Length: 192
Image (cartoon, rainbow, N blue to C red):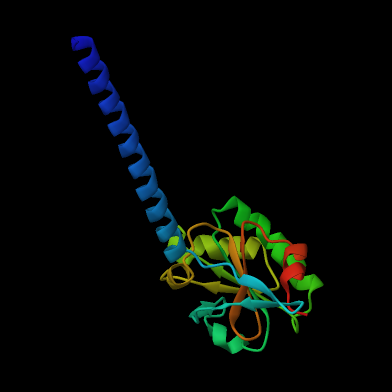
């Protein structure tokens, strides 16, 4: 008899532990998906409509940053042009590799079709001088902007670099690239 009570008690404990494990898994999954959807720039949603593709876009947050000549540059200044906006730092190995790719992109795709804006996450750098030194040793033909307060990082919800955003002439984000972006990546998404 004592053996039967022990088995029932043991079964109750096992069932209770399984229920707790299932509840924790459900709570974690719901919270993780909610956090993910609230903190990341969303990829465009595409749906088919009578044989044509219709995409809904999120507006690219506007910003004003300084360029290398200490001139103010505002994203809205480029309205009417497609923009490849990328974020980078000098200490990020992938970002340094991407600089060559961005140079190729800007050379292969005329500026009338695409402008490359590379936002240095200056607030994440050890010093502004290290960025200036890097750019003197590795000159580029595209526009470099300096985010000293981290506003682009915050407004675009950037959690990893390099992250790039393809923005259409109407100021809408049409694609987000995580990691090094290539010419083919951009050409595949660039409005014709």
